[in-house]
Image 1 (cartoon, rainbow, N blue to C red):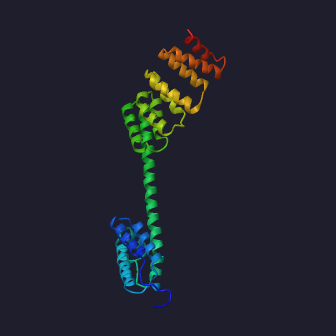
Image 2 (image 1 turned 120 degrees about the vertical axis):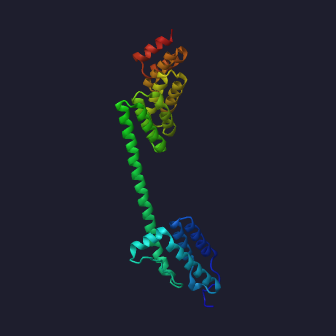
Image 3 (image 1 turned 180 degrees about the vertical axis):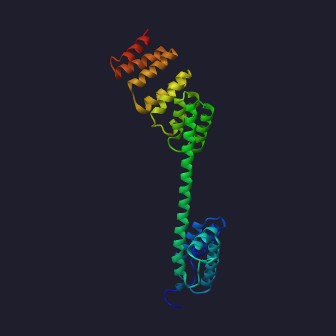
Length: 275
């Protein structure tokens, strides 16, 4: 045996070939090619002698045939050759040539996946825009049931994307459909707590619906998350006034006057609460 030669084939070589076959069985051509490439990186037939070398070469020939028969790879091969049944060439001892062609196949497969993802994304964007346009047009034309249905579909399909629930909720609120807007605005507030407008919409809707505890919850969240603002405090105090809670309104009116001394709305609220 010449210097540097070893008898055994690294186990990771045959393991990667087996993984490649498993990936092909599941239709995962990209991962299959990557697994064969990994096997080739570890397989150096010049340093290996004995039965293991020939068994590994047979395994490589088999997996290369499987690669050639993979529909996605076959499509690529047909695009670069005039042969009706193009094959990936592999002859034992020519592993370098195989190692050179596989990255090209891998690149082509990944580009095809990226192309399809872009097409899907483009189609998705078009559908989202269509649902939004048709939904808001229906609301403006007075067809509230149809408009609500389209916007609900928009939220169901794209609600995980930033801003979609807020868009839907805001459109319904502006169409004076507050009760329908609540669901989407609440989701928006939970997912994107930094969107300031959503708190005002919800507080307004709950107050109009005389759902005072829910409106109170919103105002408390605003003060906690964004700090004291005299306008927010006055609105909060007026909520307590509508709720006929003088003690709570008194506390809020004092806070508003500290933020904006002499403000007529804050003073009027204070006088009402101080009776």
